[in-house]
Length: 550
Ligand code: GLC
Ligand code: CA
Image 1 (cartoon, rainbow, N blue to C red):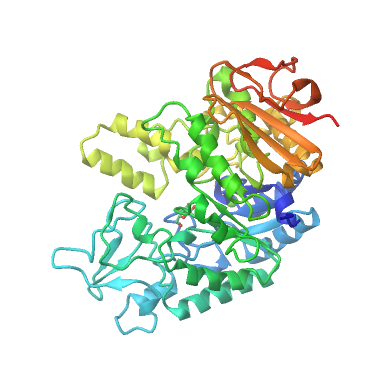
Image 2 (tube, rainbow, N blue to C red):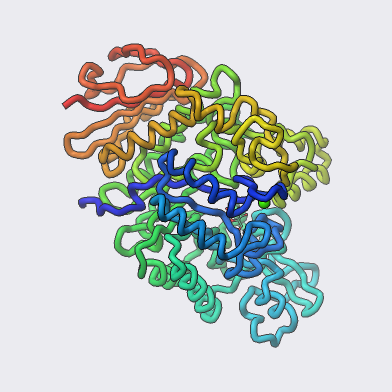
């Protein structure tokens, strides 16, 4: 099947975590005017759309993912007028704007929930999920993704409500048609304002199993992609697909085999999904090096599942929920840092799909050496830390786990300069700044032609200029090689091959049989551009892109 051409397949996206991106008014917290001041930077990078994580009114228990008013901007971030200006200015530069749509749950301060909890007879009672407890506790043994029981007791009506995430994030009841009507009209209200799409948060959790279902090996299976979710998603699709927008669903628990149903070109619920397979493979607690073979399998199964116009992929290595990719998949060590950051750029930017760069990834930002739990903001990390302390793990050991796994690793302020507050703010920011701002910052990297930032620009430009890198087919070479990731892209006669050593060691291999290196022209490389031969030794994190000479 020929692949249908659209803007959201060709563009490269950029995820903005507003509180840590740019502070314009010196209160230490990033804001909308801060984003506006950096649009030129994003344009220069080659960005086609930005995805802004929640900026709605919120008590900020989960940094904006607990919304108390869907149709207002949180004052700390600015005003609705400033938001409109941001969209207008972005559009002038040819940058589209994607919002975060959080509709699995609201804040417990949302007026609907305040009403709902007030009485069992309240008109809004069924907006949320309430149940009687058992004699000795909650309705069942379900656990929250953020730790502890998924049920919270509410004194006023002596029932429990369900929360998949924090207890301040009660789950909406999607079985109630009024809830859906209300959410859909809110969605249309935003689309009428002229935004260009949504990243749809936690959407695989909107359907719950029956309360009798006990938790199994995967404790979250009771509310992850549960059968029957199709009906809700089809209704949502009919609202979203009425417009020419970009939609990307966050789909924990959806497998590559099911991907077609979720993002099939015709009937799919969304344009693309954030899958979890290639990310959850990585468990720093148990493993010290990346399992390259399994990583390639995970990537390839999604590339294949959505090939030939069957659907489309969302490509990412980082976001606000996971540690930095250089620290996780590459190496922070001085000798490897730069090469590995560039190698990781080639690992995802040239696959088939729409790439999403997370703020700071393009300069090679790394994990934060958090000193103590006081440095941490994320609600889940604090819960897990205190659980560890509770079970007798000593604080230093618990902090070790925190440093490797905390979401806050990617939430430290963007490093614009080497100044005291990294050019992010004039005042001490809400979150600690990584001390490596002296070595890793935008200002210095703009000036250095060999920087990670300039490498990102080159890769983005290469993708924009060669249709094969967007619409071409994907082929994995050397699937069993334990260090090298080698993949091809092809559109008719236009062919590319990308070779990446994803390890700290030298890697040797024969090139694939049909890749005679004499026929190929080097486009990009991250180390010296020496000539390679059919049998070659690649340096640690060496990465190259070749194009077939016609
Ligand atoms: C998603 C968001 C995450 C948030 C959670 C609850 O996973 O990416 O940041 O905490 O949903 O809304
Ligand atoms: Ca501010």
